Length: 240
View (cartoon, rainbow, N blue to C red):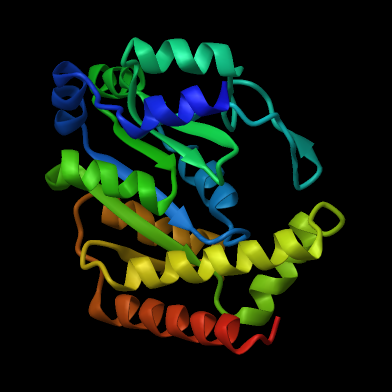
């Protein structure tokens, strides 16, 4: 079954109708390395009625975040592999990815239609691969924002608080490697804004400004770029 899903995703194309809906909706995508604080930022920003949160579909099982069990329709729409195959075959997804060769993650066209009908900004937490799909599909209406912790020590503290006892050493190292890849990817692109999550309210305020059409200041971007390079150097040096 996993092989069938992977094959369907490799050849997946959204319908023309889905693409047109996606193009018409302003979108903000929050991207960030593990334990950067995306969940807290997303919870805070979606308290505003300006946003429609896109809820990703996934085949992975629910887990606990910060002591709270994930609920279906909350953090994710949890589906089994049989339904995932049917949704792929019916072209219900706008984009779909097979992450870590383990689970499907994808967004659906109906969610964008809801945002459009309400006149709201669509917002979601996705990864860099998902952003690439949207930048190809609808670059004019897509605003990706990369969220980072302020420094390596703060990041490791947050990381341990979230994952301690849940990850073996091999999985921990893989998460570090993935984080380095994500940072490298973002630094190689011109379309990301970089927001440092050292103060939640300040981070949310920056994101709301970007979402409303304001250009991120050179000072904020340069700070973000500096922190990104520092984190990347720390990961590469093996200080973890």
